[in-house]
Amino acid sequence: MAVIPQKKRKTRDELLAADFKNFLYAVWKFLGLPSPTPIQYEIADWLQFGPKRKMIGAFRGEGKSWITSAYVLWVLRYKDRNHKFEIVSASKSRADDFTTFTKRLIADMPELKCLKPKNDQRDSMVSFDVNGCKPAHAPSVKSVGIFGQLTGSRADELIADDIEVAQNSATQDSREKLEKATQEFEAIIVPGGKITYLGTPQSEESVYNKLPSKGYAIRIWPARVPKPAAVGKYNGQIAPSILALVEQGKSGLPTDPTRFTDEDLIEREMSYGRAGFLLQFMLDTSLADAERYPLKTSDLIIMNLLPDKGPIAVSYGSSPELQLKDLPNVGFSGDRYYRPMFVDKEWSPYEGTMMFIDPSGRGKDETGYAIVKQLHGYLFITAAGGFKGGYDDTTLMQLALVAREHKVNYIQIEPNFGDGMFLKIFTPVLKAVHPCTCEDAKRAVAQKEKRIIDTLEPVMNRHRLIMCRSVIEEDLKVVESEVRYSLLYQLTHITKERGALKHDDRLDALAGAVAYWVDSMAKDEKESQEAYKDAQLEAALQQFMEHAIGGVKNGPNWLKTQGI
Image 1 (cartoon, helix red, strand yellow):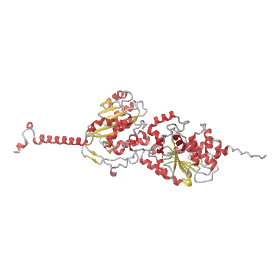
Image 2 (tube, rainbow, N blue to C red):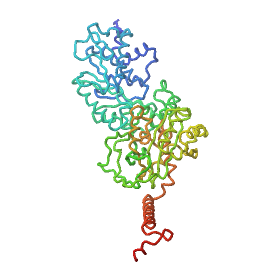
Image 3 (tube, rainbow, N blue to C red):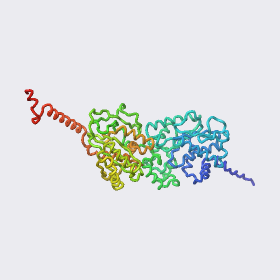
Image 4 (tube, rainbow, N blue to C red):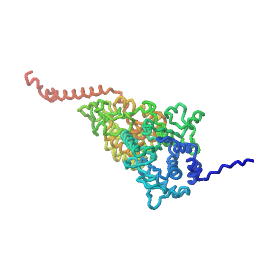
């Protein structure tokens, strides 16, 4: 009777070395985490078997950075001790976090302690060697910020870990700067090396969108199963497992329900706003069409304004020589700022100055305000902004001081929250600082996003909204810290979808101020200018009659004294 040899059972180390997914499971268990989810295993497969130029597009919180840290250690432990990794992130501190987590696993996980650097090897939080690697100029693992010292580095594999964040992708100029920095990646990688992007888009014009044209394969895992009609927006990049769920009729369901339930995703959508959720959880960067984002900075007229008077006529232009290239654009590609083509030399006092305030209640959002002045059918935005806070004394005093600085003679307050409470507590503060009429606006009943667009779009399309350059300069300071509080970001990114923006207080205040003047916009600006000039001519003739010719009551007629 023949003896059938039994297959030798693999050891734990052999199992961990055979497949990165096995090692990922071991790391998760060591960290006390639940077993990796199906999507996390798919990401692990894409890291192990994907092409040399690839991207992992996964929603926020899916753990793509942790998975990749485990991948780095798997390669160094079981595949090649001489492999060199460079980790590039949006900031140096973010890249260092990746390296720190990796070093911590080496120090604590039994299977990885053999990688701990020897005394004569590099061993810092920004770069380190692993035990067993040959001496080399490049460390085993190095971390650097995207705008740090990339030149001179060399690596077998580069991990671009969330290089795009809100702060470095808010404007067209910053996106171009970011894309230029990524061009250095090819110089870092040795021949035959790999580049892997991990990312969640922060802008509809994300730098990640240009990767396919550079030869990168992108695989996307959104938080919800897309609708069949939306699949085309992903340009064939959606993960096969997600496509299978679409075909099974599971659109709208969470793709990773063990990590993010339907209730959790609903809460996140409310928190991020519709547009933010589409970007950071659905990874949908499609612009769809021009009507989706109807408000554009290129429809504004930008110029320096005086506090007490404005030009009686202004003409819009959009030729290249009128473009204000020194102002960063927070809109989409092709959007611009333009100075006026013509400004009348004659300036006249504004016909009215109003301030609109959109209170934040207890300070959850911002208290937004906008000051808009009117002259001859044109609207002039001389100030706009917001204060963190709601009913607190500091916010109330700041608003009153702004009203005094700009000589506001009428204030309206959005009454939809607090049932007029803000008006009651603001009135005494305003009276002490800058007495003027202050009332609640009419209660808005239409959907907010549609109301804002329907108010601003016609005025902007007719180029009758003029913004002071200083308003943009102040707003760009907000872009540097928290772009979603920026008025210009809100203006260019609002859509008619409910909850499109997480923060819209400044834009809502501007729309309220413009709405107040809408009735006066019915006047044709040319008729208004002609009426003004006719009035000036009549006044000049009257003055001539009184002082040069003289009236019956003012003495002898000058013509008669001349024998005429």
